Image (cartoon, rainbow, N blue to C red; front, side, top):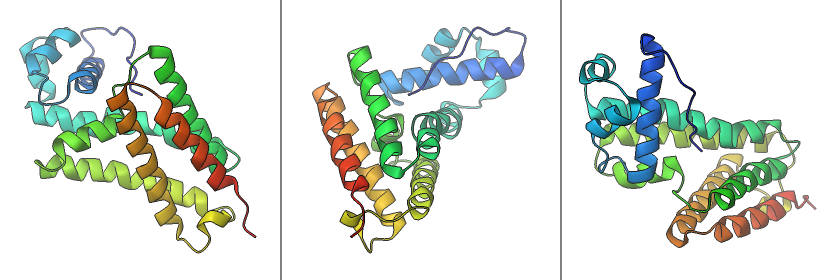
Length: 205
């Protein structure tokens, strides 16, 4: 979900900050937050200690910036943009989850969802990370709920508030991605998107 940016000029402060964020996001996704050192981030980003600390006072400050900028942006690109562009919620879910499943099959391994990974690792132990991750989940569910409210409720979910259905969709995806990571296979994700798309497409009686 998180993609690297192109080369930048080292005398460009904003671009240097972006390079540090990209490096940290990639390492957090591959190894986790706790198993990634600042030294490794600096090495991958190709920056000095002075340059790093000019932008981030600590590893935690860097981690929160990754959540609020890189992870949030990745979610919008992978999930929210396809959902908004689709003609229906069912097609939006199919497009988002189907594209992610195809990407997993192409790369041949599963590192998991960046939001899920960091939530599992950090949400219980650190209130600042918990708040930042909650904000991402809230935006995710709110945008899906808004899309659901704009069309007739599927028969399978008649009478259910849009927010509750949105939470179910996010939970189904999150669980499927966790299983996909454990199994190193996209099979559960593929099954989940097929079931969700079918349920969401059923018209009200």
